[in-house]
Image (cartoon, rainbow over all chains, first blue to last red; front, side, top):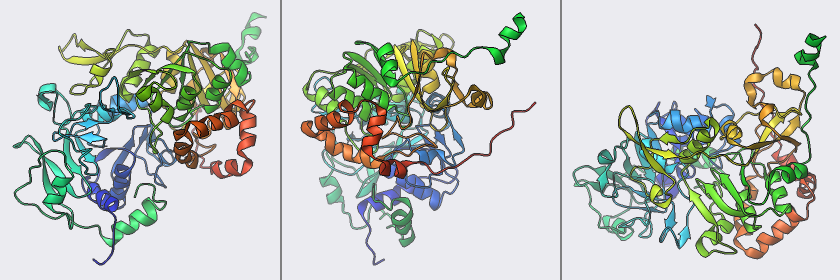
Length: 254
Length: 315
């Protein structure tokens, strides 16, 4: 111990551990992008990164600044059209893990990236779905990365852009959704995992130094906690070095 | 001798080359539906700027990700309706003119028809294949279909499964930027494709914009690289650096500093309009824009070469 790390670094490191070697992952921009590339540098060297822009098996030599970046193309296994990405890779069931985030999330993992306020007269107009809805529908599992705040962890989303495990009165199975839905939410203080028994996300791990009260204070719904609450491993020196020196030296996301 | 006259090597090529000014004037009318293609890559800002200079109005603007260029066209009053999947500044944040128009109706109301990216791609495929709809497994458990009643449902005639269905998109004009084309519009590109091929087949008219104009022999030497055959194309524009601040694989990098800076420029009405005055309305064409941006920037963005091994087309 005896060195400092930021909460973004902790989130990236923890998110990277959701990935297993040789898995096929649909990468989003921001922290998920850092997490996926960190996994590739550490425990999952054969992770297959697929970007919505059509880069398959990407090995970016620099942290891509958007999901469409020339560095995703150079050295990739394949570059495909977007109709192939969505139809063959995503709808075809080839994606094992999808990463998502949003402006709002509820206890079932439904995500809002569309509007704050009513759709017809929004207080804040957000960018919209992009590929998020189809990732939520088709990825074999979904990992969500979001900072805790009462404004974003809400009782009810103003709009459901991407379905979680229970939305609009029906479970995923009842909706007939092919993917298994969100399994974990990585926040800046804790990890929540999906509980079939409780039919909601429950706090299952705390980050070093975080308390259940702190977590609850930043969440808009009354949280349930797992019976045992292990502490997540702090980032190692090597992980922090990789993040700072190799993956995001310009501090675009960290 | 009839045989000699029709031999392919003697066929007279049609020269479709023209300036961006002519291409836009001849294809984009007030009220047209326009799709400036390119998913983060190959976004033809030069075409958007020319549409703004020609003062086109009431356009229906189509894109998966309407980024800075459509935001500028909203600010300039060109766009009446937007059909899209994600409206933001990729990797940075919001589109400020878009947000003001949707949140406050300023400077005027913007109609929106919103899908996801998969929904948009499906619409373009239906347009390309001339089918009345395209089915996709999507939107169950999402409120996107509530927000957009044009997302419907069909029942599979074989399994009885319920699928989402979207209608074809057939834009009046599609503008495709690519690395190289010949004077007939045979267009070759590499790197991220977006929906280039599909949109060209969906379009009523196709304008090809190329970084480089090459002889047809170059095209024929590597036919797998051709995205769009010239017989779909009505105009060909040679426009180097036509995508800045977007990028062209093998030619120039994304100007990320600009995308970041844009957030600040576009937040404030005054700096936004001042930018458009200086870099769009005061520039006669792309050449003038490139000159204004300065050689230092373009030297910095110029791609470092990474040639591939090449393939053997022999038989």
